[in-house]
Image 1 (cartoon, rainbow, N blue to C red):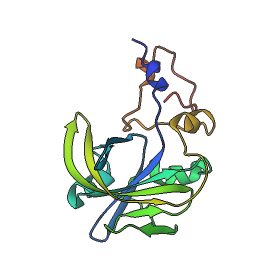
Image 2 (image 1 turned 135 degrees about the horizontal axis):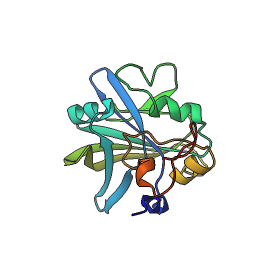
Image 3 (image 1 turned 120 degrees about the vertical axis):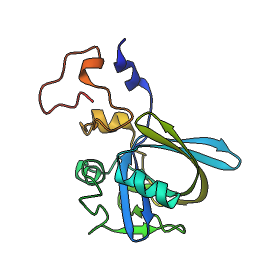
Length: 183
């Protein structure tokens, strides 16, 4: 089986955040989809080991911020390659707060959604949150970042805890040289 076929699926790149009390967390996510129109619901998938998953489960709330193609790798890395248990991802950056109290970064964001978790469905290493949309804001203009743009233009990497991670052994290709993406 050639798991590189999974690269043909399209995804956006989002900052998914939550708040439990005074604790803020956020992560980079490419698994956010709209699942119903009336009322509007979104599904958000997170690895159960992530700090933001812990906050979302405790608070029953998440925010989703749609990143623009202008977002640099350094900004994406702030939310994507460090644990919120060890690093305050919202320290020293401009952020807004939605009515639920969930944060969202102000820079490089086109839209933000405030979501109430209605259902959490365990799926192996991940949790699928089915969420009711309670607020939606347009915050900027530009092109939404896709996962393909992140990989091909920015040359971004995918951590093994991401739902879209494909191990080099399962890709049907040789493992890429050290420092290249390979997913």
